Image (cartoon, rainbow, N blue to C red):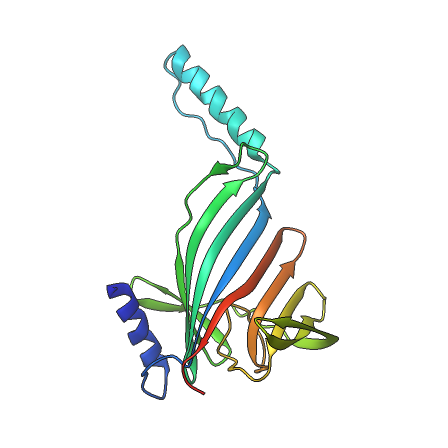
Length: 209
């Protein structure tokens, strides 16, 4: 609770208008799939056979993980205000495929959206994201999500797609860096050589028109 209050105060420091309650509250399910990177194993001081066997096992373990796919699933909350938003990520599951689905822990995260720029929130401080904003273009396709009509846009390379409802606030954004304001983002996908990301809205509450 204390961290959430600090996060609200951080938004206040960026906002020109006082916060009362969010205009929109939404939840998203986000799935990230990426390849486990190569991990360099550095052995310690081997003093006996037991240490030697443990080191050999650890080396083989990390070598076998290399190239496997790693999946992280999170349940994200977006609180959209008049000119800003809070995005809170709650990891739900994280595992490595083809390794008996070995589980591991992932920390949650908090971010602030102000204008078209994002900021990480950690230990009471805001830190701007690296600027990777993209321009998006209509694909001519549409899809209905939560009984709302969305228009599908993509970036110039075509590897990032967003589903936009132009009738909703552009601060309904689960974490897409975008130039300009097209509307609320109900879904996005990122697909490139190292990762696949899919985030889709699960619920939406409009508290103020």
